[in-house]
Amino acid sequence: MRDAGGFTRRSLLLGAAALTASACDSSRPHAGFLGAMERFNLRFQRALFDPARLAPELPAEAATPPGAFPQYYISSTIPVAPAGWALQVGGMVARPQVLTLEELRLMPRTEYRIRHHCVEGWSAVASWHGVAVRELARRVGADPRAGYVEFRSFDEGYWSSWDAPSALHPQTILAYGMNGEPLIPAHGAPLRLYSGVKLGYKMVKYLTAVNFLPEPSGGYWEDRGYEWFAGV
Ligand SMILES: Nc1nc2c(c(=O)[nH]1)N[C@H]1C(S)=C(S)[C@@H](COP(=O)(O)O)O[C@H]1N2
Ligand SMILES: [Mo]
Image 1 (cartoon, rainbow, N blue to C red):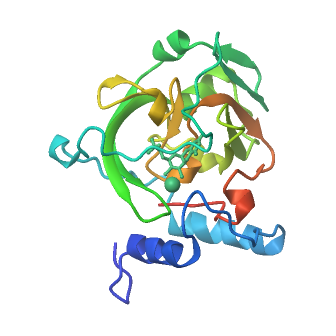
Image 2: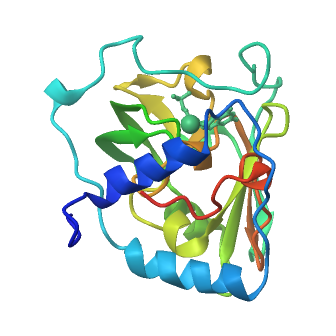
């Protein structure tokens, strides 16, 4: 997509991000503020980033070579899932549930190969497979009035909250596999969020819980000044 100035929307975004954000592992002082401006901003972003738009699927040749896909976690060592790990699903839902990986694997499977965009400026390509968040929402009977979805993890409490249209986008999945293989710990095992509609830091790895909420609950980087919506 090109605007009148001839820049792609993505290069503008990544350029802006590069100016303001030095790295995912450095904190920035000014936090976002709530209120009228924030609501205006959300409306504006929803118009700019059509929540129904699909990220382009890429051919196998486009895949980043094995081992070259960067790996991020805020813990000092690779986070390891607690024994008896299961995903808690709650908040504004009719049927709160605790789901094992086996139960998630039995749900409808979504798989795609798309490009990952980190706010630091790098991008990489892999295929991901898992269950769509909207399948999960259906299973637990999420209240349609829940406008936000929060994702929490066992990586030092890393978390993010999303607008419901982006969370329920068909390409937003709870991924348990990458490049046709089970997800490895460095990339968020046993379960991570993946999506074609958000920047990397919104895609929480090492998931523990998914909560459907009436209000957004910030996020690890979002509370350190990174943009909350972070659409791609
Ligand atoms: N739990 C957790 N999730 C996380 C992060 C993290 O540090 N901890 N980093 C985020 C960032 S900044 C990016 S770019 C992606 C990177 O995913 P990858 O490590 O599989 O490349 O994970 C995101 N999810
Ligand atoms: Mo990132």
